[in-house]
Image (cartoon, rainbow, N blue to C red):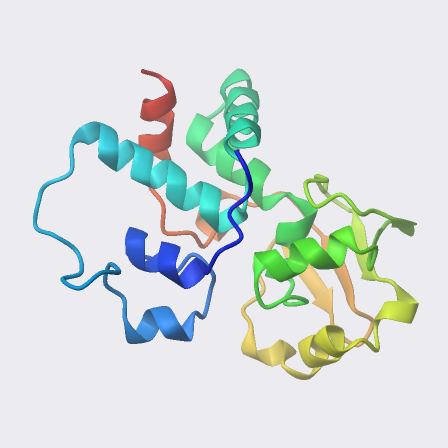
Amino acid sequence: MARYTGPMTKKSRRFGTDLVGNDKAFERRPYAPGVHGRGRTKDSEYSLQLKEKQKARYAYGVLEKQFHRYYEEASRRPGRTGDLLLRILESRLDNVVYRAGFASTRRQARQMVSHGHILVNGKKVNIPSFRVTPLDIIDVRAKSQEMTPFVIARETFGERDVPGWLTVKPNKMRVLVHQLPTREQIVLDVNEQEIVELYSR
């Protein structure tokens, strides 16, 4: 299955939640696309579970096969599977670049990583799915810092809320990972237990 590259606002409206973060177009029209918007039919239990999974997949820009691998990894670990699944997704390098405020969307963050603008502990990493660990230091490469997206990120840094598990030094374009996030630190409108129940069928 190919990665979705279409307009994310359309997906946000379909699922009734902002999958991008600060999506002004969604804020203006937060109802389902189409002439009549969202219908009044009640979703089945399965469709509700599927909807929650799709919300998470589209939010993080993850393919189905990869998402399922993340679930299987989470299910093998001790602890709440849903919380662990979201923690795995949050620890992706592209997500950390986004959460730090260096990119306006996860899609833009993925491109930044893929194009070699990001260093982890001093080494270039161009794999968006790379997983960060506590005490990792993420930097924007020095020669990339004057590119327009990073200049904008520095100038608008105060407009973004950075989660407590990260410390950002915008003047250095540096991020320190203190720890992996708890569920309370993950801002995502998704019911992860529905995803667990879907895969447990």
